[in-house]
Picture 1 (cartoon, one colour):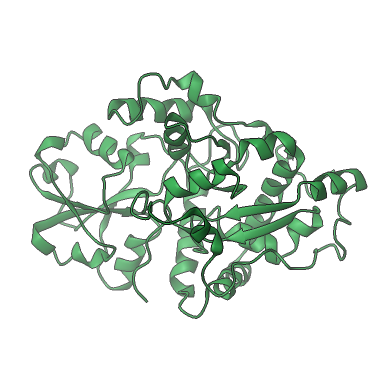
Picture 2 (spheres, helix red, strand yellow):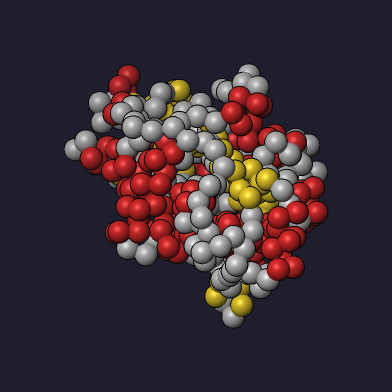
Length: 375
């Protein structure tokens, strides 16, 4: 199987695709949740009033970040559908696989062609700065997945001064911020676009000394191929980011706040299930494989899930339950985007914080524990 790009890799290269193409789905099964409710009958786990409210929300389209890859914010929503958690809450959720084009996904959410899906906090801010209307509603961590990889002979980032650094189309702002903080002379770097094959790094193709990637993807591929690399993580340099963040169509959220709460509730409940041991991980990855077809790499995707959930565990959001949004992190991202002139000065921290709604996550916890099922 060819190396898999990670969610957020393809921001603009698919911009020519029609919006309906993304929602047409791909893989073996991109249809709605058809599993039976785990409580034995649809909606039996919640009150009749809330059940009626959630049914009135109609079909809710969950659009993944990239296909049905076993990333956090994707695999648990696949599992929530297959385990019947959505039906337990009287939610009619249709799962659709995204292409990896973050910009396109934000437009689909803003237009209402998708209802809810993974969007990093930085991407919510950039989308809103560009007039694309969506609301951030949750995040698992202030640590992002973007990393820089080097061969083992690089022991200090400043050794990269004047060297060739590869990327997938652009160097993520978080990686650039890390390099600048580490004292690397940014203007001295020779930035080159590479494909999705990470083996160019150990082969030092065209003098390559470093390569951007995602902590759960390319490093695992290279290790499996016998080429372990050094992974430099922006979180270790105090660079703000996010992991497992979700966004929603604002009009839907305003009309159906309880449905938004319960989408997150089902996803978080499934997250706990899928993270409860090897058998559960295999089961959840198996659901994604069923929906993706015979080319789905279960071994790699299992490693992706384990790496990302461990990352969440190692970097919990300060003072928040799982899924809670840290306003200070949002402000930090805005500062970083200003540093590299990615958003205009009119995008202040206060303004950006208004593009996120923390109430949905807060309302599904009691005494620090997820409330299941819904009231």
